[in-house]
Image 1 (spheres, rainbow, N blue to C red):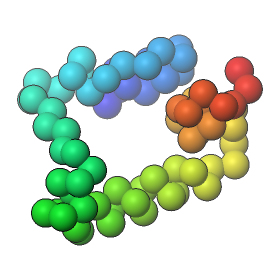
Image 2 (image 1 turned 120 degrees about the horizontal axis):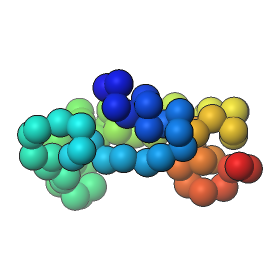
Image 3 (image 1 turned 90 degrees about the vertical axis):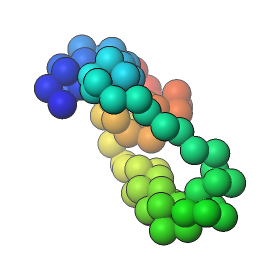
Image 4 (image 1 turned 30 degrees about the vertical axis):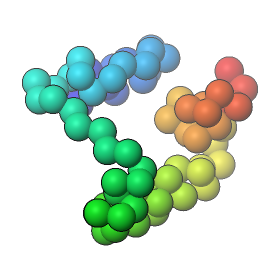
Length: 71
């Protein structure tokens, strides 16, 4: 986790692959919706919370991640 926070402070984007030693499984959104509805709902809640962020200058805000924030 320290590696991620350090990279964020520097304005560098790193993936989880560089931080953990386990394979990352990414599911299609349809897979979540139909076969893992609780996980899909959790995703929607987290995404909604991310979009509500008002601090566009925060590197982890939705605006920065989406490329809409000011630098």
